[in-house]
Image 1 (spheres, one colour):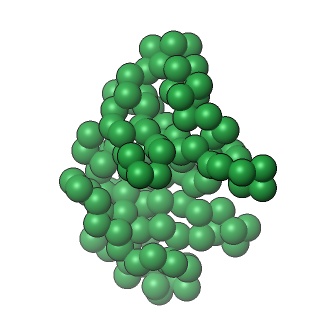
Image 2: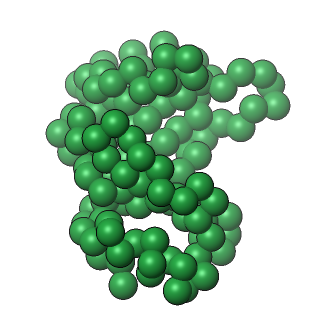
Image 3: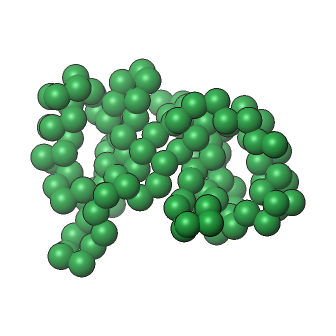
Length: 123
């Protein structure tokens, strides 16, 4: 069994990255944690306990809203094995980030869930 420790982050598609960053930083006193992918127009904002990964989408047909949510897990090294045994889809396998690893899974409703080794990717 995968041991979930806490909700790690929420990844959100937004209309305007600049407006969204200003909104969340001003309203909740969040700070910019990282310019996640400058080429992809995305940033991580939050505080010690909450992280929002915001990325701007272009075009009227682009999806807006929650893209996926992340869960920090205790036993990351066993995650892939457990998911394989249970037949849980893992479309990307293990993703290696700068300071952490993640595996993305898909639930029966199509929701994507990121299972992550360290809270906030160790930001």
